[in-house]
Length: 194
Image 1 (tube, rainbow, N blue to C red):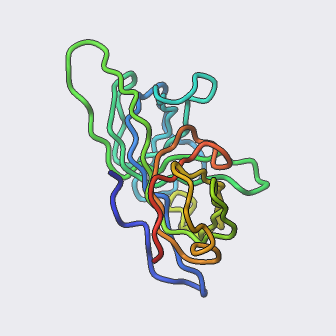
Image 2 (cartoon, helix red, strand yellow):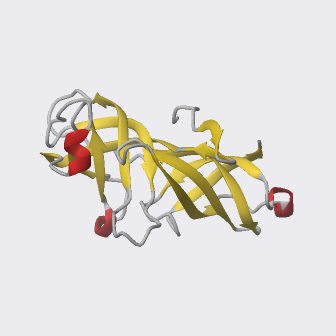
């Protein structure tokens, strides 16, 4: 289960939140992040492409960044961190900011088809029996703690019996990521009011 710490103090009348995640992923490719942001940090970042075996083949690769050291190419890790979706016009892609990496040990090639899990606090803008449109404001540590608005459309695992109770409310959501696509790849398995 993701760390239950996505809710941060308010800043400029907005509640700062994160999409906390747990991923099982293999490191597909790893390189020193040579961008201005990657090199200027106190602990320089490593960038990597991760392979998530439980995702569809056409979208099973995800960009990740980590300042805790170089991960081993081809190894399987359980990764805990924060997922940042790209909703800007700047063309940057969504990525996983890794806070903790635990390497799985075992003989031969190890794979995991477990779906990534998420936990978040967000404002529910619209809701019906089958999905939710949510938004939140987040602080991105890679981009020098800049504040970004984020949004997603999340389907619900079980139809909501009274969806209007969540309309225009701040809610706690948890579920799984069927893909990185924040418009149609996330499934909510639990929702409650803050």
